[in-house]
Length: 75
Image (cartoon, rainbow, N blue to C red):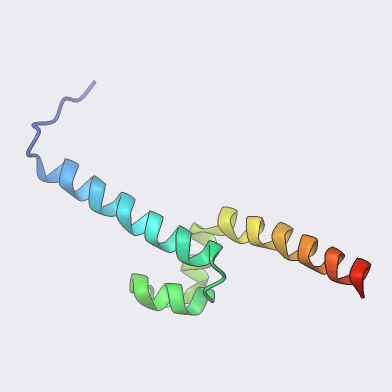
């Protein structure tokens, strides 16, 4: 087991990465287009963002199908 010093740059780097991941996840769940999120993250290709955050995209797909089903029921 590794033990890190409380002021370790690794720990700070990990927290920064966690914030980055949370930022991207929140944007994707809010239906911000993947190419916009990719640009904010500095990804050269939105395909990178789509691969890394595929689990979030799948959640959005389920939500989209629920929205469509409700629209069909009321329409």
